[in-house]
Length: 243
Image 1 (cartoon, rainbow, N blue to C red):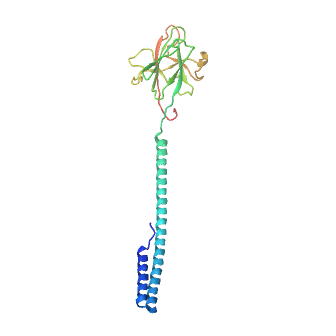
Image 2 (image 1 turned 180 degrees about the vertical axis):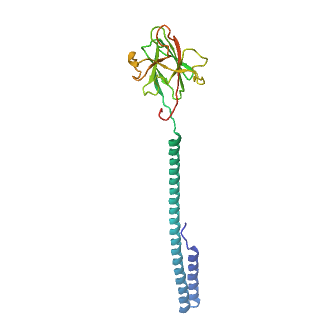
Image 3 (image 1 turned 180 degrees about the horizontal axis):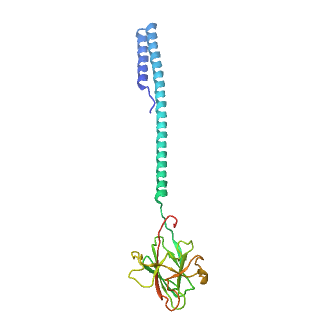
């Protein structure tokens, strides 16, 4: 708020002084001069009083603006706090999955063919069971599918990520017959049997594969009657814990 500028009052004072000089020249009466002096003194006092009131009002306005700014700050602070609490409650309630990229190490005895979400991934050593392949497992991968080929003795497919998010065990499903679209996202594997335990990791350890991983196949994994080709799938169920 702007301070009061008593311009009008000053003009009145100047006018009165000028009038006083003219009056004194024409009628040099001490009584009239005293009267004018009293008027000027009264106006000066009223002007000071008015100026004091202006200062008081200005101070009140300043305090009001400061208090208003403080109230606005508190409102904004409170609103921000409520939004943060709501966001935290939403995360606690529903969770937010942020998948991360992982490295998948995989091999098969004797041949291995890998598919991620229906797309075949070219492997460097698909026919060397003791030389595993390492591939990047993209964040949003939903289905890992593997075709295994057995040519000689006991068969098996083995794979894992370093953090154990993916390991070959009975959570996989395997079949000995190839179905159309078996490697794809939309394939229904509900009729497939869980993967069978082929052999323990320590029986054929592979560098880069976790020790708690199992070699898997169909239930016919050994001998002359073993399945020579199998098709195995794992559907990843993303969750907060997995990310």
